[in-house]
Image (cartoon, rainbow, N blue to C red; front, side, top):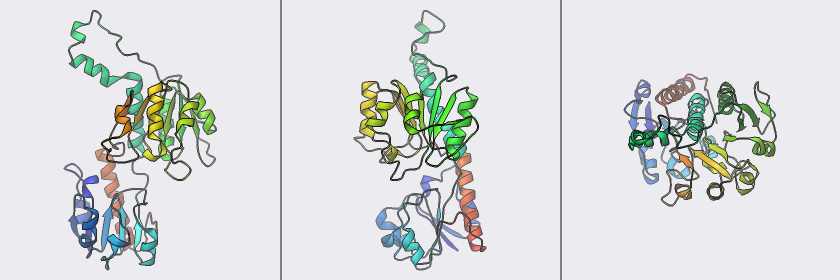
Length: 315
């Protein structure tokens, strides 16, 4: 079996390797193929494994032996599903591999907003504690999470995990979801009530036509003044200029985002100049254990497909 990885560097590094795939067949591992390089690189493949590589009629046109496309991801908008269906190519994704990782990162961002750990670390390493008149300098105001209201938009697996952590911190947890959902420790409310009452709004919904730029000027205006906004979902759920303006005006006290509308970040990304904005480069999903779990899911999907009982089948 010939297996081709088209954008291996988005998952594989010196800590997580592709050896489990090599147990299934011959592996051609490419770090990150350009669009014009894809077609020839996968021409003789039986299996193609991708993360964000675009597989459309142009890039798939030479792949006459291709039987299976595996995704290092849950989303599959980069795959032309109609083409694959017409040509008998199975597509399988990987779901529920990053729930704990993203929930953990969400609270890392929330805790940074409330405890300002990096600012105080900088204060110490700049030598300022040495010159402090008191043992405990109150340079940056800190706040407790207990008693604060955490509003979760999207109560899927990740949103549910975030809710449990919020409960553990003694927060009041409210949430809204597109379909009706009831969770222990979570008060289900409408979107506008969630915006009005939350001290922290955390986004965990998928990006679709309904959620695209749902966090815009109108949404930010309805939030508590000075509230914290956290996005570890998709960048497209946020109108970035509107977030910038809400931060500039102080309507939003702090934003913490792991995703942007365009990734990698553009040179002129407006949020680079925003005050009180913490940004991480789409790494919430990427702990070592999470990527190892992801590799295991992808390998099992391939095994199960060729054994005649496919799992996580998209088409």
